[in-house]
Length: 522
Image 1 (tube, helix red, strand yellow):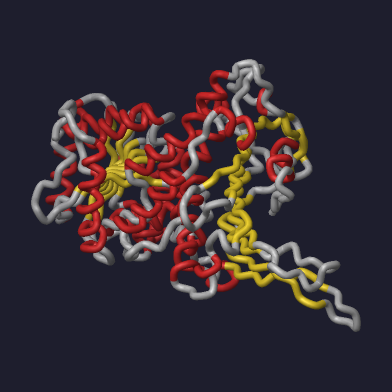
Image 2 (spheres, rainbow, N blue to C red; image 1 turned 60 degrees about the vertical axis):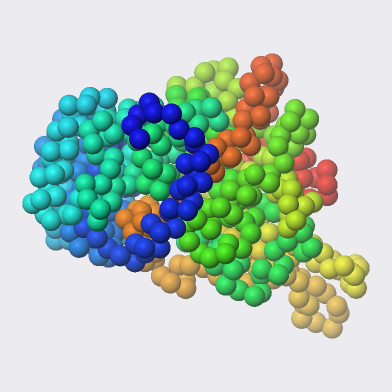
């Protein structure tokens, strides 16, 4: 299908659900030669995250027996200057460990660069010739992976030019072409649908990998292992035993030098619609029929479709926003959001969101999910808390056990903690709370792979399990769009200010306190 052709998006997603199963399972574990084209190669994300992840994969023989990495961006550069630029950036990355000079030299010999404009067809035709030459020279078999590490406003231009230059389809029945698209995938439901329409007019859904680096973290993936390979937890993972669920994604950093971007985004778009709802769907997902891309992603979609829609009344009572003011973080005074460069001094953009989400299905009916994210909070931490109900008959009435919970620490210290009550030593019946902790670092050392390396490796193998599908993206936007609409209409409503270094505005605490609950602060 060429750009501009009519299409049925829903049918495309449904067809992809059937087709992707073979793509994922058929290539699982297979390492084939590949050419990676990195758009936005001169940008910070490419240099600091994506290329170091490819280096990591190459050292573990996971990128392919033969490979080439071609950077493409507007900045004029030679192959050699590109190699030096990315080497300097990679040396500052701790995720892949120290750079071995000899191994880097071998890796860098596979790095190339092509300058061009994202909307210029002739530049893409030149790119196509370069790729053909590299494929013939290095025997890469025509397998190609396009990675969009660019500002989202140029995604449509790149996709359309790839189609017009004949780069979106495989050159032979044995070759494959895939494309990785970074978030944000749209800024509301309408723009997400439009972007899906453009992408799917050039690529098939089974070729498209919408990346969310949160899903590459070991503890996020371990959610599925924890539940579905252990007879201990899954029987408890429902409304009969779970009182509520908390998901927190907290940052100590402010907007830094991204104030201009953040003014157009805000915490709801930047974090809730993507990272936090992804975590929510994994926590709440039903057991898939099998562990493959189709089954897992179908079940994740059902969670989002089961979420109770937000109306005006629910936004007023179940959603809290806030904005950080001046405060102290790590013992140092920091400015408020409105004092940051590029931010409107009268801005009403939210840097904090807390919300109650209800999932109307058999497993989770009546169990509230409390979601929270914010900048300039007291501690950097992403955690999932499963708070279990009290015992039905409280024998020790004056010695209650409050903290029967399971905590999954996703970052910065990946691990799992279970807390429960025990008798304290002594002659009297005293009860105290204790915790059993599992740490990835202590159990397996520091050799864990970066999230980007994990997801890139999956894409090269054709495993789409941890990537978002187009219908799931649209379902997430459909959930948050009404909140954005209410906030947009309420132009005079005050946005609560919270001091930097705190856990957010007081309204966030009240969201739980009205039902006798409280936030678990890491």
